[in-house]
Image 1 (cartoon, rainbow, N blue to C red):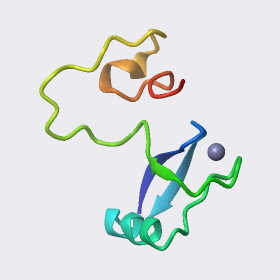
Image 2: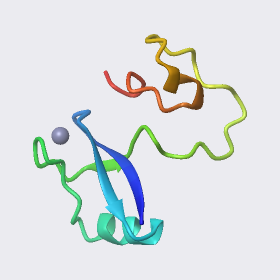
Image 3: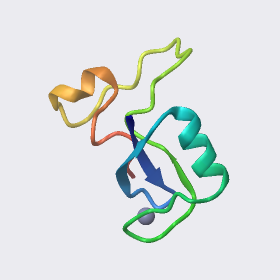
Image 4: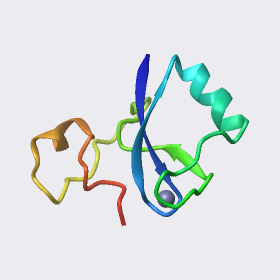
Length: 79
Ligand SMILES: [Zn+2]
């Protein structure tokens, strides 16, 4: 089991467990994913998504939390 931090199009972040990333893709395709806060089905992988192929370092976070250095800053991606 793996957990993904997901985010709806309105910016609500929440965690969902999946058996694999294929499971995530499957559920996303079937539109089984919905934001628990507003029910939005436009859900994308959020804060914890692995940054693959990123050449430039992430912009400096504004909050200074310890998690910021690995891109998991709770403040990032939230408008
Ligand atoms: Zn939402």
